[in-house]
Image (cartoon, rainbow over all chains, first blue to last red; front, side):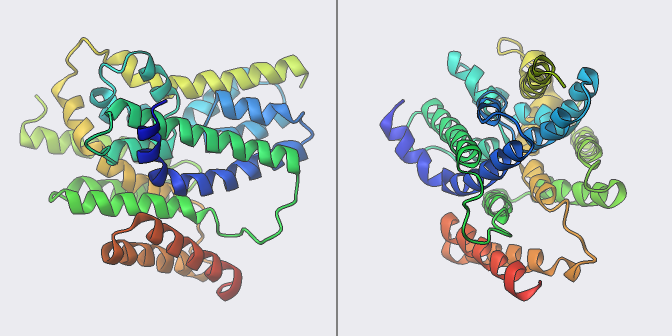
Length: 228
Length: 108
């Protein structure tokens, strides 16, 4: 991988490094505490690479074998990813073999950075996005490995450390807010999500929220004539 | 669950996850011009998704407990730091450290 791209990408991924080391470690610890071999969580982090989905998979693995139920839950928990590709259709155009990995590695954090942070002018766009994706993936694998191998050696109280991800999204949100004069898309996201969270609760609000956001944009697009 | 069943379950989660990520690229392949609405959606969705992700991170916060004040204070701090210093790492570190202090020391 190009050194320059990694150097340009690394500072943007530091919050992810902290968050993933923390979350990955908790995930590794959780899997070990359920009695799975040490390589299970590591292989899963390499092949699946999603936080919420892998935590959900722990529940699946300790209950009865129900493949269809497993598939259904995976699709529901990951439903938000269905929409991440849409803004990236254009960005990933012409990336060739890289495209497969860029799509595979599109977790919330990777998507957020690749979608909002433009690479410096002297760095290739594809190389930059690859660097972000590979770095985030490595952090996730490293965190998982740490958790699964070391066990509970975390010596300081990490309560609240998970806020690092919230803070990352807030910072990216502020950046987008300042860059675009039209704040309606951003507000649509917040209002629809809060509304659905209140109506459906934390476990079930993802699909309704996404649906409501799309519906709002559809109606607004129709009004503007962007949708025929 | 037997080991084979475990591995099948892992494979299902893997394929299901990959499916959700690859889905839009299957429906709208590179050579074909996507419908106008999808192009429009691609332009506005990033802003909405970032708002959604903030709410998504906070989905398990209980208002009964401290009226979600630690979260509100920490998010406000991140926004102020970002507006003031315009340095992402300072904003994220500042907000997170403050949040950890709030939930570990102030609002126990």
